[in-house]
Length: 140
Image 1 (cartoon, helix red, strand yellow):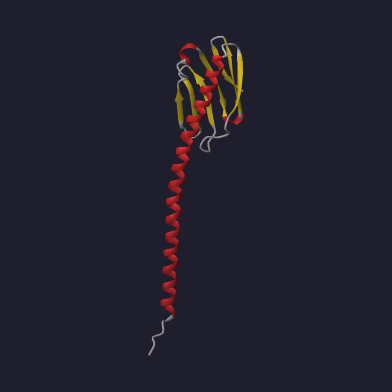
Image 2 (cartoon, rainbow, N blue to C red):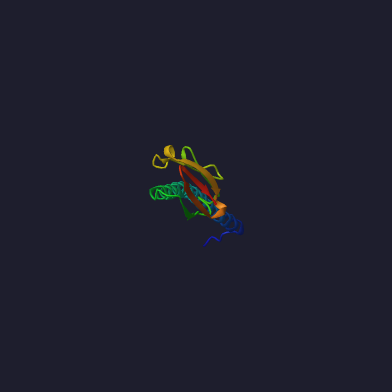
């Protein structure tokens, strides 16, 4: 004689299987959100460093010409998904994103010889570095 399963057991079995499926799906989502956050964090740091190097090399190129001049360059619209402020000051290059990630870099020691000043936000998309005498200015 074959035992027949009653309807209650089938319903309970389906509920348990469905619950296990949801638990597995949410576990995958949670793990991938952690990976996504870490990847975004690392790429944001790398983008800050690269933008700092671009500005440094433009300043160096401007100074090497040894004349009054200007260099225009494009700015990325965001770093790590956030807008940012790019600033030149007596310590060199200062970049800060809206989520308070900060990058500070000297400019090959040129900040001791030249007066660095000016700031732009990433929303302008282009910036200009100009050299006049001993002053290097960052502007729109």
